[in-house]
Amino acid sequence: MVVKSKIKQLAALTLMVSLSSFAHSNQAPEASVAESKISFWDLPALKKPFIDSTPTNKNDGLTVGHLNANHKNNENILALAKQLANNELGDYDSLLIQHNGELIFESYYKRGRINLPHFQASATKGYTGLVLARAMQLGYLTMEDLNKPLVSFLKDLQPEKFVEGAEKITLHHALNMSSGLRFTDDQLTEFRENREKYSGLAQVQAFLSLSEPITEKSQTIKYQGTDPIMVMQVIDAIVPGSAEDFIKKELLDKLSINNYTWRNDHSGLPVGDARASLTSRDMLKLGSLVLNDGKWQGEQLLSSDFLTKATSALSQTNEDWQPKSFFYGYLWYQTDITIADKSYDLTLTWGAGGNRIIVVDELNLVIVLTGHDREDTIFDQLTNSILPAFINNKAI
Image 1 (cartoon, rainbow, N blue to C red):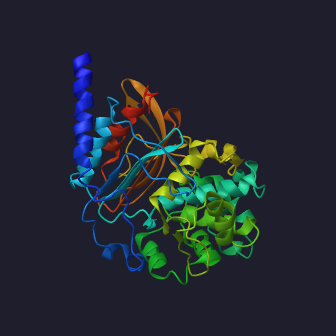
Image 2: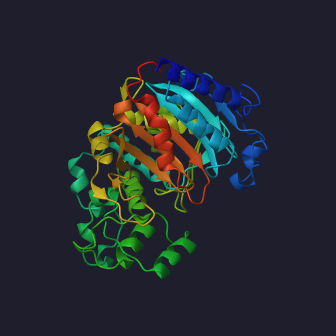
Image 3: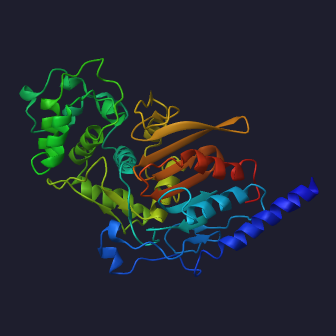
């Protein structure tokens, strides 16, 4: 047994040495000024991937540590990094791991840059939920308010034009993707191709006027952008000033997140279902906030009651592309992963291309992945490679 253990340790160290050839310096790759101004899709791929098991302290609010290469399970993490570096798993741009409050592994591939905000796609939906949790913590909303009709928060709508049952949509329904709104493909195309017309309250008015009637049967989970878009409209209605200012001042500034974009619709409202961009390190901060029940550096930023609901398994997802084991809470996913006959509760926000923040409360673990992979089938390999290293592992 001792011999096998030493062989495994040697293998891990050998793999670490081989990975060091991918990192061309001890500095994570940064986008130049010129690169920061071009489209993500025009950004040149890194000449060499960057893999670091001893991340650098950037004085950005993150505490750093190191990945213990001697631990028996860490060779799986290093092997995963090598596969990403060798383009064996798809088009992914970064992988970061935080354990026990320390960033212990940081890597960048292809179009990944430490200082360049990466598009988040639908991971933005989870961030919209966190903004609402901040509004609740500040007293602009209560848990009881989640069961009120969504339209009760919004003024200047024309209820006489609503479809039957529109008043049945509560904020809870919108957060859980179960508003009951249903549209034809032609209507969805109309919304997408006429964003100037369908923005702000006009967009919500259109949703509530052009949908099929809202019924108990229709108010089941359906993954769609309409619901988080309406949530963002409610946020804008209940907070002082604008939702855009509130997001910056009351959430992102608190986390020292200042290198980001969150695009607005034509009315000036941040888009609730997509279109945010964050650096990988800043994604890690949002994951830490969820892991710590809404606390950041000792301050309770988010409502813990809301987070408990948001990260629970309220409804089972039912889209063909969503894993059968996935559930939906309030704009966040929940799933259970079984490793060595033990089940672990995972919470995540997930966007197209492979963008994810994965939180494992029991292991005090946050995983960040960014990418632009069309198929994005890495989830099982990601969790099976990383989680075992932190189970019954007190040495890291």
